[in-house]
Length: 506
Image 1: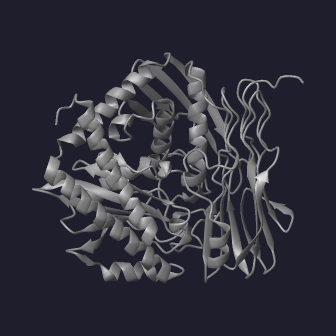
Image 2: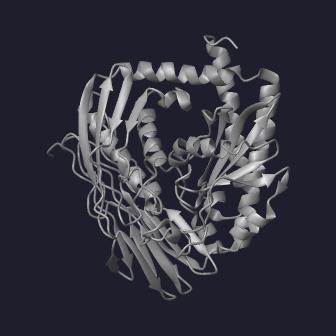
Image 3: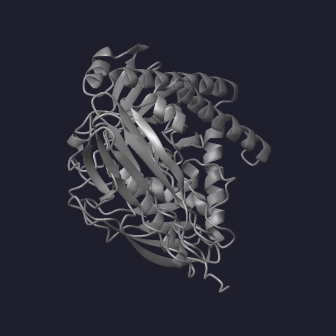
């Protein structure tokens, strides 16, 4: 194709992104668990033969930014036509164990590329239902760890691998159904990408990546050069005293992001694989550049990332990582934004809730998992959004009707948390109140942040309120596991966003 022809580039971009979107639609429409079919906690993307992201669906940022690492590790097996490689190992390209990634090669006159899906499975074993134990101290507490391995070989499912996996999880029938949905989504991607390459070749892959890099460099050049620093303190506990230190340098058409000074890996589960940190940085870059720049390998090529070995953002096995993907990723975004605010003249919003508010309720018979929205940060132009997922998540709350139909739970309250956003010239968005009554004896795991350190306002705006976790009206910690009896009320009040600018006197 002609690399400088914008019409051809846009057509290629939309067709390839359409393949990723269609894969996601197949996965959501055929999955069994509410976490995938209702909350859409899944993602899909297309890669070239070198494992570089070419196009992605508008799915979950923390999934998509980290997915190239999974594809890279899967590609080392040199999978053949009709094969599917599965991986969830955080130390081999994964994020945390519930996120199971399936990678399928595409062949058209040789290897043409890969397609991949990532889905958060409601349970993959471990010490607690839902495989997100707030008190985990080792990866072994968190579920079945799968290095890159062929789940489908020569067109046939590896039944020995599948049955071994299912023997170690709760609700194996649901896991089997969700895996079948994921395999089907990959099959659709292979079919569509094969047809595209057969018709157009692979020249558009490299052209789109180079175009995204040129556009991103131009966007970075438009920012004022400078250096900024920030430190984000996460809530402590469970052997952690987590601190994210970051400096951002804007130098011409490049960004250098350095995490020197960040805490060493902790005894708890806030450790985040390096791919998660890289994903968070990429998300911020996407936020400060034009939304018509293609989201692919080129859009992060101008960014250099330095992460000290053995720190919170590059842990060694067998460190626990369940919270790193959901909580630490959010706070990396907060830190990079604050450093960038100091480094350059770009207008950036106040901090949003900065947590995914992960809550898991379950026993041997069911696993309910959800991330709950909260307040968005206000900007120079407008108030923050109420009750929304921010940062590295882009999922939905489980509809009340679906939740009560699928689980032994009753929703007693679901409302905005009025007044929880920080005041300012523009107010921060309000958080959410989500209260459940459990109808069976089970365990509840809260894996949350911003219970001690509030989302900060900007340019004189007030901070948002911190979140609160309650069991029968009694406050519990931000990361806590509690056994409960039938009739217990479990309530989560999520943080509000920070305000922007000083509030005018009435």
